[in-house]
Amino acid sequence: MKIALVTGASRGIGRACSLKLAEMGYYIIINFQSNEAEALNTLKMVREKGSDGEILKFDVANPSEVEAAIADWQESHEGEFIEVLVNNAGVRRDNLLLWMTNEDWAKVLDTSLNGFMYTTRSVLKPMLTKKRGRIINMVSLSGLKGLPGQTNYSAAKGAVISATKALAQEVARKGVTVNAVAPGFVRTDMTQDLDEATLKAQIPMGRFGEPEEVAATVAFLASDAASYITGQTISVNGGLYT
Image 1 (cartoon, rainbow, N blue to C red):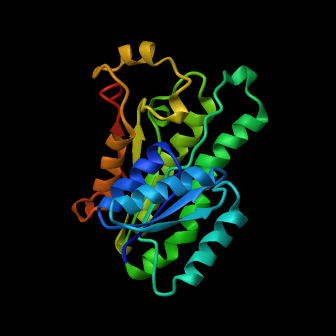
Image 2: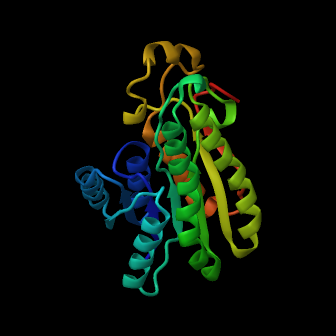
């Protein structure tokens, strides 16, 4: 059984990734932190794709929760291992740095950066033992270009991009690839407070992206066709930043 874990999979890009991987025949572990109803809805949609899965609650920013949840899952699925990890969970707490609180800074870095570390570390050993695995990190245009009002988000995503490059070199000989996908403005709950009419005028394609367009890139990186690609960051941004 091919198994994929998608963090923050109850909605948006995480849900789209879950559904695309389900189409590829993966059993999907749908991580969520608080919205169980939407996580169950994602599971229902996964099953409608002809695959199966389960929901798994943990806060990626809490190392003890991450380790306990994945250890319990592994214990109850003897002989199986998580072959694909999509580190998608993330939050925004936008503000100019002058007025940014310590809490907003820490929350964003804890979720995107520390969450990447805790979750990846918990699933990595079986990948290395089996000599097969795909780690795909959801980063951002903000981590490549930097965006005003997102110093915390840019710092977190930029750090994950660098970590992607480093980890890729650590595990390449064991058949594990590590890549990142950097969406631009994508129409999700996380971007619904943005001024889409103004922002899309800056995008060469003249529109926001859709979650499914990001998920297609994730699916490619999870596939055998991408077996010689590692340490890379692929932008999905409509030409906004190249």
